[in-house]
Image (tube, rainbow, N blue to C red; front, side, top):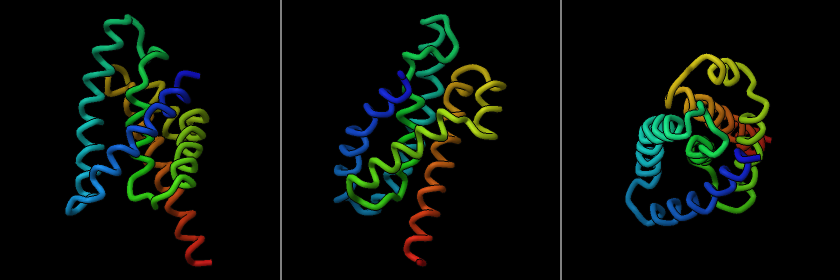
Length: 139
């Protein structure tokens, strides 16, 4: 599955960016700006790639998976367990496409359409993992 392979490729890049930003002042702010910049760039990247390939959301276009995973990992605790949990939860949302992900995937066209379902899947995965973290801390 290209989406899973694409997300897997996003993991070492996440680890690299996370390590690079860890020693900065305000690492979460810089990470947020990084994710926003890659999401905005992704609209153009995905639009351009789909035009070149002459297929909307071609399986070879995986920048959207990169950004979706990076969104999932926002403010995540350090450690491999969270890298894997983020990966799995993001893939579940991206594959199952519950509302509104599926509706966005079907109805929104162009580069923004390619990106938006993965952006929302990443947001939902991030929220899900953070709720689980909160419940674990409360319990």
